[in-house]
Structure formats: C-alpha cells, structure tokens
Length: 382
Image 1 (cartoon, helix red, strand yellow):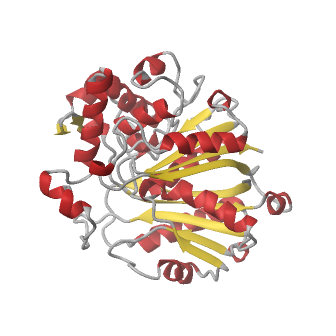
Image 2 (cartoon, rainbow, N blue to C red):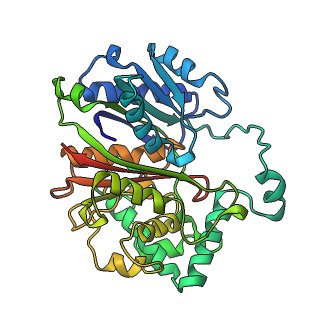
C-alpha cells in the first residue's frame, strides 16, 4: 500500500476556547492543510473525519463536508480513539487505490470549554468495570504502569525519564503547551500522584486544537506543482483487541506490536531501518510499552535503551522531536494525527528549529482506548 501525503495543517494547542466549536477547528486545520499543499479545495474528493460526541452525533461526514464546502465522492468516520488519525491515512490510501477518490482530506480537531459536555454512554464497561473502580483513562493506565513495575522491576524514575524527554524536546517547539517550562526527572516525580503510581506530569495535558493531512496517489502528486516534496506512506498495520481493561489479553504488551510488525513488513524495513520515531504518548507507560513492542529493546528494558541513545531532535534516533503529546498537549482525537503531521514535517525538512538530521523514514503510531485500538504507519521521504 502506497500513497503520498502532500499537505498538512496544525492548529496550535490552546488550553481553553470558550465560544468556539469543534467545527471551527476542523475548518482551520483543513484550510492550513490545503494552503500547505498549494492546491485548490476543489481537488479534494474524499473526506475522513472522527466522531464528535455531543456536537454532531450523526451524519458527521455530511455535516463537515457542508461546512467546508466540499462534495466528496467518498466520506466516512474513523472511530479508533487516539489511533483514528493514523487509521485515516491508510484508509485514504485504500480508497484511492480502490478508485473511490483521488485526493482525501483527513481532519480531526476539538474545542475545549471550561466545563466539558457529557453524553450518555451505555457500553458494557459501564456495567462490568466502572462499578469496581476502573473508571477513566488515568485509572486504567495506572494499572498498566503498576503491572509493568511489578513484572519487570522498572521504577518511577525510569518512566519519569520519558516525561522529562518530552518536556526537553518541547522546548524546541514554540507552539507546544509546555514550551518555556522544562522539567527534569526530579521535577516530574515532584508532581502529585493522580492515580498511583501515575504522576500528573506523566499524563497528557488536555487542550483544544486540530490537525489535518491531505493524501493522494503518487501519480497525482507527481503531476502537481507542490511547494514541498510529498511524503510517502509505504506500510500500515492495525489491530483491535478489547475495549475494557478487564478483557485485555495482556497488560505489558498490546496490539501495536503486530501492527508495527505489519507496517514494517509492508515497507520492507526492519526497525533498524527507521530514522525517526513519532510514537503515541498519552501516558509514559504507553510510550514505554510501545518502544518495547517495536523491538527496540527487550520487555522491561526501555529505560536502559533510552540511556544508550540520544533521542533529542539532533540525536541518533529522535523520539517525538516536537515534544509529543506529553509536550505539546492532546487535542482529543487530533492528538494521534499530530504524530503524522510531525513526521511529515521532519521527512520533508520543514520542522523549523527541531529538524532531525537526515531522517528518511519514520515509524508513526496511534493508540485508542486503553492500549486497545492500534494503528502503525511507516512514512518515507520521497
């Protein structure tokens, strides 16, 4: 499976956006992506969007298309939580290969009111898990960290190193929510527990924002006068294993493991052939398990592996050079798409102030629910 990403758009994260709608963030991100690609919006004939709980509960593609002034030949909702963004990219490529569209806009975004709206949720997790205290992402990821520490002997300091790296890399990104506020390992550990053993600084900061990418075929991209070299999708993998933590096959490995293996196999690369890591990092433990599942190190040895590498933007293997979500903030589902956008910037050489040296290939991941829904992509410079 191959396709070309010819445009990206990113709305800087904001802590609060009273009076704005999610639709306005989608429009802003889409406008930026179209401008970045240097094409007219009339070229877009495919649209992929995410669910919008509480704002547009039904007919989401039609509502977004109307708002953006599009009449797509293919439109759909991708609902994979934080894996939705990467999941959109390979679905766009598949739609193009099937002849259902030629140029697809993938867009996600979210506003952030001071008081978040609530919507009814009647799925089984509410009946069988929540009454026993397993309520919310913080509790679930705290369970993952607890299990990792118990099984492998990893420490609080090991995980804090991942958060400190994110803060350090965020200092190279002026739009990051933590720009100007670095934190070392001791600073991370000084932050309060939210759900023991998870510290506040190990958890993403919720923000408003939006991201968009434009995907087309290699042949169409070759015929366009693009302001930037396209970035190629050369491999993809996806897997869903569960929704509730009580049904997870494992607490120390997840569906990203086979997803990453499939994406690398499609691209004809081994993990040693990857020059940039743009990995989903809602919590430090999620990032730790992803590093291990990618085959970069043995289970339980992520901290030792980190200490053997320079993971800064100018290092031997940059990891989330923009700060990742732990550094820039998480704009709801758009957080997953931000990893695609950053990888595109890096591979085409437009990551001002944080450019990785000679990066030609990137591994991008997305994660939904609690290590439940997984998508991995391999992107390469053209």
